Image 1 (cartoon, rainbow, N blue to C red):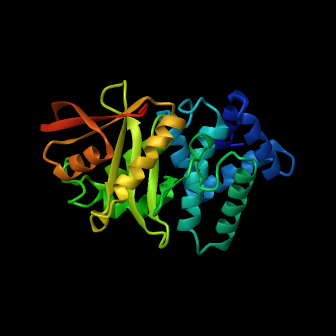
Image 2 (image 1 turned 180 degrees about the vertical axis):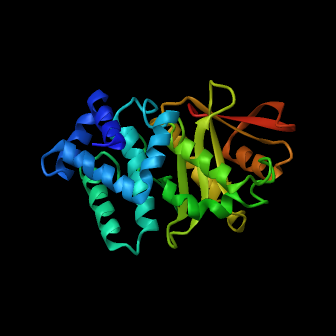
Amino acid sequence: MGAIGKMISDLVQNGGQAANKMTNALKTLGDGNMHDGIKRIADYCTKTGIEEGFKAGSKSGTVKGVIIGTLATSAALFIGNEIRVAIKKNKENKAIKAEGEAIIKVLEEVAVISECGEFERHKHKIITERCILTPSTEADFDDLTPLLTSEKVRKYLGGVRPLESSLNDWRKSLQATNEYLFTVRLHELNTTIGLVIIAPHHNPIDMEISFLFLPEHWGNGYAGEAVKELFNFCKNDLKLKRVVSETQAANIRSRQMLERLGYVTEGEMERFGEKQCLYVYDLRL
């Protein structure tokens, strides 16, 4: 069966209730035989270079254990996203493209992953008046590269970081069970304009909302529009009572936006060598 095939099999056998869905998916892919389905995915991973990434992910714990240890969530997330990236990279190879699309279709049909390639826990799509916020996937990285490498965007975030480091952090966040990344696009043009994130704050008690938007779209109210809808997601889906946002004291534009949204300051501190302001939004209001 091979190393990756055994890894998939182990995750299915040791998984929880959700693993039943992946078992059904594997049987469908293997024409009734789960092990043939495992081999089919393993062969595709080997052909497209996903195998090494899967092995590395397992060793670092991003596949096993991070999301309750079930293949239906953790491995399907990783494989689903990676297959989509492989399809994009091999779009000229009709056989690889067709096989990848066939695997994705089966995973979608049994609800192992959603239509946007994310795992079930985080398939929530948020629609605002002018924007669509969809759960981020690794396939979004190319569209978001200008955002992550912009000196203006990174001015109060420690400056521009090497692209490889940004990609590694991006992958870790996508795998995390307690981080929610949404890629923001405009309704009409389907243009990627930003990224909003819900993740644990530096203190372990609170969840923090962060936002990054391309400079050419600043001043149009898109960030505020997106964050307002995140309040509803945090309250209704995550069952939070409050959220925080932290920004450098020197970042006047960001502070003004938070205050317009109804955030109140809870304190100031020095972090990363700069004075920071901590803002709190009470979701019970």
